[in-house]
Image 1 (cartoon, rainbow, N blue to C red):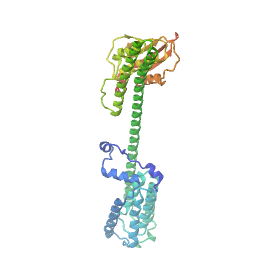
Image 2 (spheres, one colour):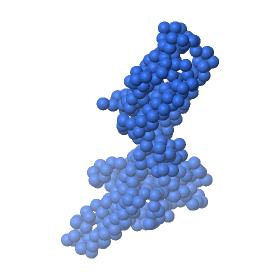
Image 3 (cartoon, rainbow, N blue to C red):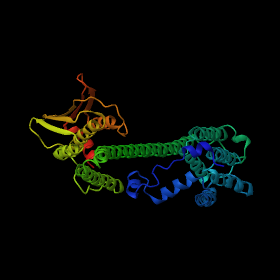
Image 4 (cartoon, rainbow, N blue to C red):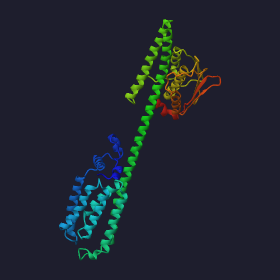
Length: 426
């Protein structure tokens, strides 16, 4: 069974679905590195690399022993020499056991007086595996204990250990050995830090993608709400008119049915446009997004529902960013929908103020509130506030003292909202 801490720490620095160019940019584009990291995280037994290390240690030690005045490599020495590479098979599943065992086996091999050589390579591999998998303390203690033990063997216990004619090791060699240990630790820590940085970057990318997905879902939900709420309100009112006049005034009932047909057709077109963008994200819309230029159409739709809408403008109209234009249209649309649903007034006034840096919308009706449930979702005001907040603006909705209701939207036109505008327009 894999050590739970090792499983928690083992995390590839690239996402499985990342494109190759993204993996290359993170420094993990090499197929060898990707295969190595995947096998390490899966806890697989690394027998191919262990076999290579074993062959290298055996052959290298045999050559190195020819120029040394040490004990000849017998069966016991060969067995001790094989213990370290054999323990490397455990480095993916049990890195702590591996590094401690390799350090102890290497120390026993040196204490037995056998020849120096690449016997230290398995120790370096074990330390690297332990540090990268997150077991830094175990790796440092194992390597520190090994170095302390080797100093004790080379300078104080050599009198009691084979070979009998062995002398104290030169301190220059100990300095070189300490530098080698420091290099192994530094390389291991560097790879560990790099891997953790890449894992954090990947997690941040995942969080950013999740945020973008959530924002896109919210945008689509808000768009569908605004489209359907207005059209269904018109259909609801006209259906009531048609039913009331079906027997007494068939011609007026026919007009109501015609209005229902036109409103439902427009609603279907708007919903189809939103769903097309959902199916093919990033593609250009087939029809332009609505804006304040379509207020006359909105007023006509409201008129078919029995609501007279007057539109007044103040200031010089300037081209609006797409997102601001769409948000302004939807805010007016939702405010008029609320008048149709919840107000006894059949007159609404839309006042638009074009400023140099701001666009102000004011929608008034004279009330009073009917207090009836028109079948809405109750998210109209919340949706308006979300649209305004996405652009850095505000929405004020309040009951007037004379019984009417007023909605005021203040939307900035500064360039800092371009990103939000573009995203809303899409």
